Image 1 (cartoon, rainbow, N blue to C red):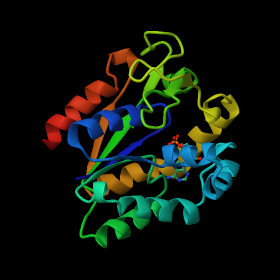
Image 2: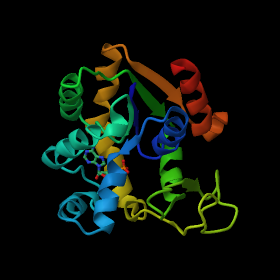
Image 3: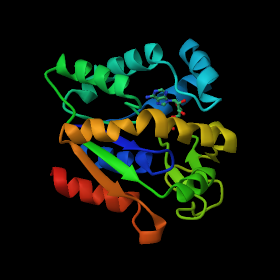
Length: 220
Ligand code: AMP
């Protein structure tokens, strides 16, 4: 199956996608992670992408769409994938339909994560991620802290704060772009009958792992 994680920054897309990937065997394809890996390796793609990412803007489709098309060609994605952070615009969603249609596939399920806005900013500021690119575990300093401060429970590597999570202006810019360009995808996929909306909020004690459990019970 081809799944899409939809939702604003800080709603837990990466956490849910990671659990679903582990349970299903379908790769988690995170465009943000691919960009960050290229930035840390200082590749040409990384240099170009960083001009946009550092300001909280979207990387242009000419760069993003072929990158995803290429990743979906890998052997591990031939039976399914969990797209995390793509598509982010209606144009990207249309491009994805074409990419999958050429393989005789389609988007099977779109998981739309919804979190109250006041919680998302705090969650982004408190987010820490494992610096080991093969692990990428995600922590939250208040809700899901590591056992040892600054160290990943899973692999022992250093935890870091993403550069674009440090700057509150860039966070607000990313949320504004979500509202303007990404949120229309909710209706786009609702009309196609593939949307599953899931609430994630501390207030109702419902976190990413609870959503992942619910999704797994629906797709198994
Ligand atoms: P994320 O890790 O999903 O929050 O992505 C981090 C940053 O990478 C975003 O703020 C964008 O600048 C860029 N990015 C990730 N996915 C996309 C996409 N589908 N289209 C354009 N830019 C993207």
